[in-house]
Length: 67
Image (tube, rainbow, N blue to C red):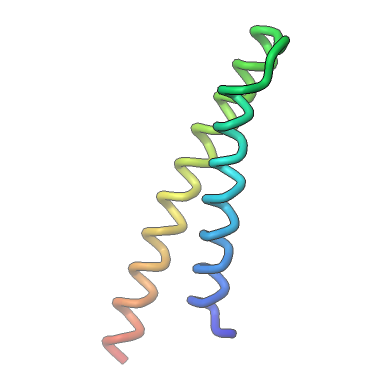
């Protein structure tokens, strides 16, 4: 598995974890405001990480084509 494939696999796993966190935010009951706030903060950071990883994958593919 090359580094692009590893990043793509990581991206797939990250998207799944991010979706699970969002489902938890929407369905878990009895969470305090602090817990919800931290979960939302984690969610938004994970979304930023998704975007950065997606951009890295795109760039790596573009650079790989130039070789």
